[in-house]
Image (cartoon, rainbow over all chains, first blue to last red; front, side):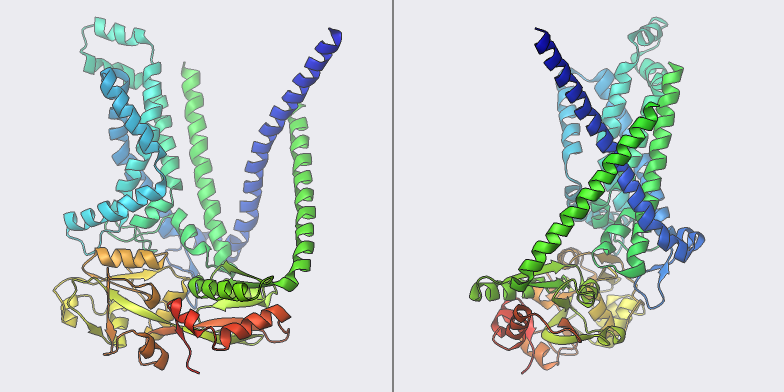
Length: 293
Length: 279
């Protein structure tokens, strides 16, 4: 009996150590990536100068006199993400409201299934559909010579962020205490007034989380936008061919050499810091939300 | 205290992993050394994938026991790899630059024609190299100026480091001056985009062309094997094998090199869509 108990204890400690190890591994991966990006990204920035790198508006990595300004990519990523959020959030939020508060059971199941499916579609498929459907549509609809531009990228990104916006928003909307709704209804408000005047405001920090998650998804997307945005290093214009931070790295990495390659690592570092900032904001919002409760 | 322990554990693990990596790669290096006498490693141009793939397959079939490897990294990377001794033969879809030619030899193994493609609906059939240069720099921006429809020209190209783009800009004299509407990352993407846009013009390896796009004549010459080989079709580039000047190739690598450049592989080169050189 005593022996068995000791055995059990040993297994318990062993398993504990294993779980701890897995936890440490995760930290290790993050640390490795951070160290690697810093080490390989900083030299090129030093060589070019932070100012010329971040605010230079000309990218000509293979020219006789190369120029490595990434402002076009930075602005494109910011505008593209902003546009996608602007277009995607209202649709996503209203869809979440429908799912959480208004949907009849059957319709809810169907919509939720579709949202899950949308989340599972690989980004290259989004890109392909964008290239064959959205790009020609944008070209014809606006009478442009070519449809591969920022707008097409925004349309594709807006659809891609829907699943994260919808599923997180739905969860937080459901988490709003029933008493709030009942109190509002008892005061004579209609159901719609209750949802938009009481439930949605009560869930606003959670909805902000959903939006930030969408930002993260949009900023980091490479494959799909590469296929619909034209991929030329212009300063961003809604109807102009543009290149994102992610695609700047992806499209030149396989061929690059020397300083050009180092600069691509620097772009990756900028992208990493971008995502890091997004996550920090996310944490801040979540923490403040917890404190308010 | 807990934090300190965590940090120490993480560090220890990290050190262990790093050490593990070190010994691992050491062993690999050793076994690779033992095997290198039986392996011919090539490294470089992605445009040469088809050619080198067919050649090495045929060679390995005829010489069992020898392994030909191919690492598709791009022309510049391949040249760098051979100069650093990381591979036996470098592959470049462009001629060597002056500074590269100091220590390296380039041997042309095949020629690749670069086709100028437009949408099949486009009535334009023939352009001069000068006209193409003007199109891509933006001087000519409407198809009407070239005898086509009154529609803006959409210039489709490849990403900055592509060998095809390098070859195209070299021939048309538009180095770093092109005004692209789209820079795509593969030959297939270019063909797909041009086939989908009636106003587009693009360039792609002749070997890769299909019926969804129309290849233009250049100064009255259509891109065919004969015209590319004779040089009558002007937009073309060389596929080059790059070797070190001062170090001789290993026996296996030399045998493969002779097989590829000796003329007996010409049929395979044709089969791969490129054009053998004139002998």
